[in-house]
Amino acid sequence: MGLNEAVDWRGELGGGTTAALIQAGTFRSDAGALFGPVPRVLWDRLVTDEIDGDHRLLQALNCLLVETSAGRVLMETGIGERVSDKVREMRGYLGKPILPAMAAAGFEPESIDVVAMSHLHFDHAGGLLRADGSKAFPRARIVAQRAEWEIALDDNSRIVASYDQPEIRLVREWGEEGWVDGEVELLPGVSVVRTGGHSKGHQAIVVRGSGPGTQTLAFFGDLGMRPWSANPRWVTSFDDFPLDSVEVKGELFARAAEERWLIVLSHEPKTPVGRLTPDRDRYRFEAV
Ligand SMILES: [Zn+2]
Image (cartoon, rainbow, N blue to C red; front, side):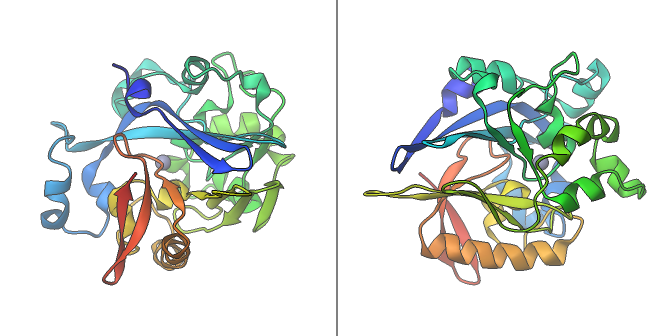
């Protein structure tokens, strides 16, 4: 059974708003880098099943398709199809990219009104273009923070390593039409909130249903990659502004726990949907 069938998840948020999880393949990232400042003795046992011979973890490329009465929103696009065999091998990239994964789930790319990007790192923005360089979502507005577009093309060598700048340049004009600053409602019930932390213009995406049985769903991007991200102090080495990550995670997670939001984790392969519960001076992610 493929990963898509294994974790297929759909949620009703109320008032006709639904969310579907679509996994656009998997890749591998260095385990130590993902746990950042956390000593190995504290995280070793959490990952014994997935760590490979190169000390890498299995990272899913989780995307969400939200349908509301006002339109369809896709969150994230994964690594996409424009990768060389060398990069594919180096990153351990496997599985279906976003377009075939969406097709398997019954969604046409032409039906997407908005693509909301948590940030523009290669493993989130790579699927904005088809293999031939044309727009993967021809009708969609691409929504990321203005600050994220600005930092993505910075010449600092660390920034150059995190973003696929030649690809970002190809989509910049299209992306510029959808730039936002701060907290913005994209469609009724679907909002983005600038968080910073992981990257300068990183944003969270929050979806609120309506009417009886209403639920709120939040996608915290790479501030909520895996279940252990529920501890605000467990930030990755890839976070460019770690103190901001700790602070904003504390604020967002407190609200998510209090209001019982559904959370979808950005890179969790097995149990990506759950809720946060207060646990001493941190939170615990409980899969649903
Ligand atoms: Zn990521």
